[in-house]
Length: 394
Image 1: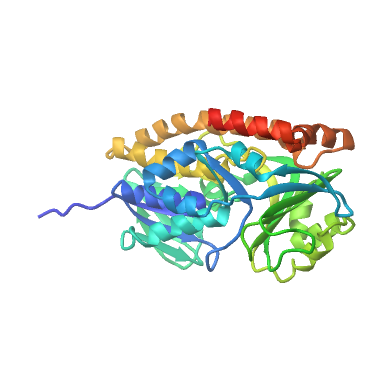
Image 2 (image 1 turned 60 degrees about the horizontal axis):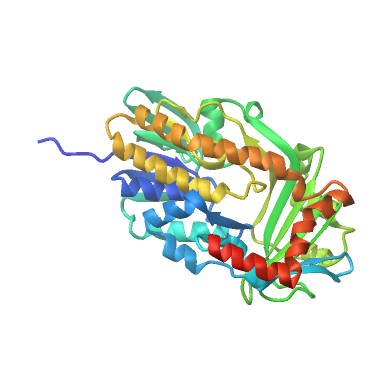
């Protein structure tokens, strides 16, 4: 008697893309092993706008209610001067109207929390998550793929999904060197969760200071939680990355003023620090036989486009749907999936390249141009008009 075997995937990366893929494959009738290089789950991350295709996908996958509970509702956005005085303020109702109804303002780490709970809850027994292991070798044949891990095991699967981020090991092993596909946008980004809110920043408020070539923002995400975000220009991103966050951020922000000294003073004790180049991945094709890239490993639209988390969840949902349509033809499913997702990913990449100067304007004039719409939104008549118009069109 022949027993039916569910198809199996090895998913590399336990971030948003990897966890969303594991959940959606489980829903499609697959078994999955999620492999994560880090010894344990990371926390925190910067706030993102979760909307569009990703919002719709999360609703279909059943995780939208939990994501909505993590929605950050800002009281207002303060734009400050180096001495701490307020330049202008965008009131909370206007900010919330700009976000819209089918959109969430949420921390990346909170999205991961929700997906991890779903994977280890409903999918427990069908999805395994293994920490402290990485991919060292990939071998394919017509029937599947053998994945050798750093713990010495060899995992046999029908599909290998590289959802392991910007510096993907799967992409390097199967698609070639990172330098061949990485497009640096000459910016760095750093994020970590603060132990305490700096003096002068009120709970529930997002406050930021931008001067020539750099931005520091403090995002209050609850009475006892706050996140610091750094974004700055550089002509030497690889060297900055090699120096690491403790050296590079202190050098870039040591003379900034405002709350920068307080924030930098908490850096040494931060449990988890995100620090990386702002780069896009320009990969000619996202699959090679039974290996596929997804999320930042495949496209990385960057934080400038503001859509990476949404596109990762949407990509996972679309991959699961394609495999459901073609359960006996993985190659066909991957081709259809890429044809569906690639136009949106490339559109967001173009947007990211176009607006990259808004995060750390190169000179005072560009800063003035960037701030002009926000300044207008801070005036009460304009704010009221925006709230009415956006509520009517959301």
